[in-house]
Length: 132
Image: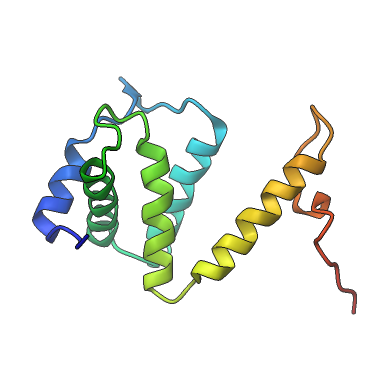
């Protein structure tokens, strides 16, 4: 599927429901707030512009909706993460293989972490540490 044009993408990003209250966005899970903050920080550092972000997020939302995804905004932060991943890959700051490897490492770390403990990449039994 091709990406929608910039105007459509921007309007989709702006028109998608995002959970918020009178003070701004609210998050159902801590990872959602972290993903939100990461994008804000990367924009602040000039990694990508607000327009680039709106286009990337709008494209992910449009693609998800076209493929039968949620229309009520309940998967908004999943789309947020997908947009961030694809934008960083497009800018040459990440790779599909690198993202997949890191996601797998986090999953193994989560499985190896005792309930109630913080999940850390060091808990991945396949992670190799180097010294030197």
